[in-house]
Amino acid sequence: MFKSINLKDKIVLVTGGSRGIGKAIAKSLVDEGCKVIISSQNFPILKATAKELNVDLFKVDLRNLKEIDDLSKYVISNYKNIDILVNNVGVLYVSSLEKMKDENIDEILDVNVKAIFFLTKRLIPHINKGGTIINISSGLGKKGSADLSVYSASKFAVVGLTQSLASELNDIDVVCVCPKVTNTDMITKNYPDMDPNSMDQPEDVADKVLDSIKGKFRTGSAVDV
Ligand SMILES: NC(=O)c1ccc[n+]([C@@H]2O[C@H](COP(=O)([O-])OP(=O)(O)OC[C@H]3O[C@@H](n4cnc5c(N)ncnc54)[C@H](OP(=O)(O)O)[C@@H]3O)[C@@H](O)[C@H]2O)c1
Image (cartoon, rainbow, N blue to C red; front, side):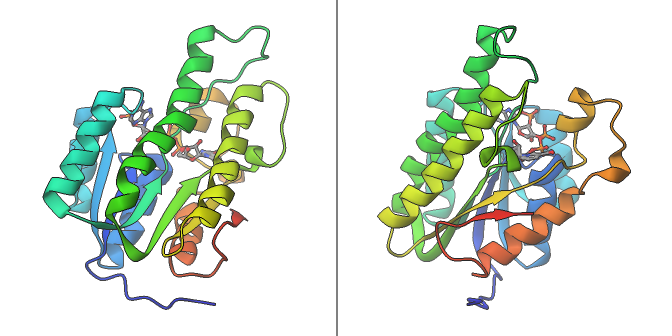
């Protein structure tokens, strides 16, 4: 089932590519010869990562529709079309629903769900035939857990989007990758007592993303890491 595609010179956008899983995905695609654009909000970190990986960058707050438009326009005007879109951006707040702040509910749904819809919608006409959309969901996109209701619901949404879009699009594969607990700022900030060595590493997720881009999994799949 492998497409065994040569990824050299393929154009890729990785959202949330400045650190963590997104950075590992960007690096593995650079190693395959892709031309990569990474996006995030914190400019110093974004710039440092872009320099380290020798990739293009775009600073964007994906909660803001105008800035999503600006990112889409930047990509289209500079590259015309892309081959791979990696919707990796995500935020996590851990709390019972009862105690969770309204603004945190908004942010999770804006970043983890709406940003993917708005950005993907704008870029679909500019994804080359044979291209791939990778959506990063989570194990929590298949099974909920206490104190993670909003995050989990947002990740279920990503699985639903992936399955539906895969049926909608004929010439573009859409695959969702579902990491387990992975050693990034997202986890070390929220679970400071957890041992990083007991977790997956960002490169484990990047390997699954690469397999997905190379066609190892059927379009519409939600692939566990
Ligand atoms: N780590 C895990 O255990 C785990 C498990 C399952 C799924 N995931 C998923 O994997 C993906 C990557 O997670 P991670 O652990 O690598 O997270 P992370 O280390 O917290 O990195 C998140 C990335 O998203 C960017 N970002 C956050 N809010 C943004 C916004 N409003 N606009 C633009 N960029 C924004 C961040 O950059 P700035 O700070 O500069 O904005 C950063 O580049 C997420 O979708 C996450 O839900 C992670």
